[in-house]
Length: 460
Image (cartoon, rainbow, N blue to C red; front, side):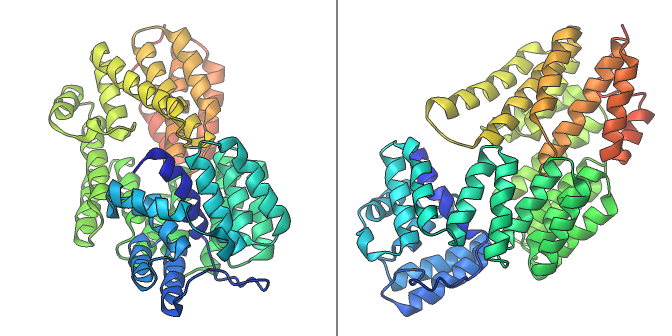
């Protein structure tokens, strides 16, 4: 599907992720000629709320069988979480129908989504904010619109503004539990870990029968080094939803980054048995393969593996690519290191040149990841001054939101601490180590036991 089309439908799946069935007294919520289709759509809404995407898509498909002209169901079926179910030609045809819909027959909320899609199709993105603000001014208590505004700030890395709208959402629709999830992530990102834990536990309290509250809490516990609690949270998520992919992935991350490779492999075996989609299994397998060799410093084997596996062929920067880059730098294969850096830079340039809006938050993460790669290479090439500058820049871009971001930030800080020690800046290095310890004392203890070595730099 065309990238602009994904942008047009992305908001629908984001909105759906947290919906509870809040009735709006002024008008019906959804427009369909079939009561049976409406029931199926509402079941899709409930499944989407729990992040159970396979079930949601099944209900969407049934809704469209019952009413092929169900506009919001058509648009929702094109959302990114379901993109593997349709070929581009079919998706394009459905989207054209949505764009041509008679919005006078739709609810205000459905009109908003269609009008938003039309603006994106016409590449009039500068009109998206005024469109949302206009609808929100007229319908200030529509939880979908409030959540859309919160998500807008979220994607722009405007945490304070996003939190304001998430809190507003909780006030007008307390059962929109996804707001607690986002408030938890926001607090986690800002380093307010106790507050984040409270938000995630509130989420869990309100939706104890859903997998995602436990999974989100587990992510926080990984970042904090509370590994037993993290594992317990992920296992609870799997107990509730045996085919919940994120919990398996996070268990594999937990065990891989705490050097339990056999445990991580066992998680992958369980994921396969549970029928987790192949794309998730491949991601976990790549992480575990490369992390296994990373632990022992098997740099040549990592580069050999990179030649034979598909893990580093993927477009986006992933753990396998980062570890391959480190291996290349450790043995002085600068061409390979520069090639990986260049691929990440090309990916960022592609987003910009094609107008693909992945959100300021994601762009900052990608830029920080690139600066980290460059900083590692320069440090191992002996250019400590420029390496320090890049690592400081990367650290400044990142917070602790979500486990992958938190892991990268903690690693960057430990690499920077090693670099500071190598250049005789001992006081600042130990101050930085203390900051890492305040977040994750387990990894800090391991770092200290290694002689404060992440790259193996020599003191100058």
